[in-house]
Length: 174
Image (cartoon, rainbow, N blue to C red; front, side):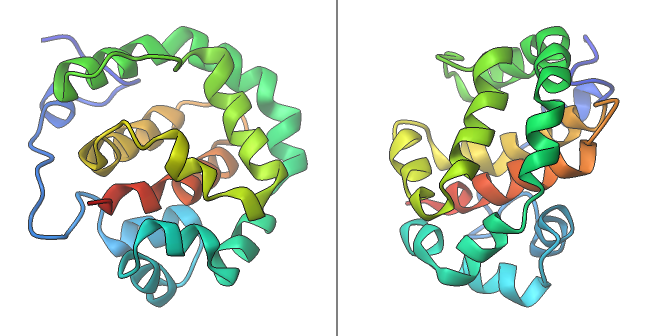
């Protein structure tokens, strides 16, 4: 079996990401580490409906604290990296969740992250833009995307933080 996602083993890429009650594959501690938020705050966010998270003042402040200048500066590096590696992630999504990659490309993924961060108070549009995708995709796929980004030659932590913070509320939609 092909090793995918920049070193993530095939076994990991194909493991079961099914719901265990309302517990996502990534636990509250993992999300807190990636987001650089207190565990209690992440637990609070995970107890809320996603729309409330995206409107929450504390959540919006966390978005404003992201290093947007660094993300902008490294966007060309991220696009180039995604150009080389995103197909493996897209194939994982297609095979695991039976979802076409749609508009996800090396160009759009990085651009969308930066664009959403330009207007943190409009983060709720993340929910609207992704409403056609199952929450299970974010439950398992977010973790895989964060692992993919581990291979970035620069600003890995900033990109992982931004991706996780923007996407984790999508993990537990009903």
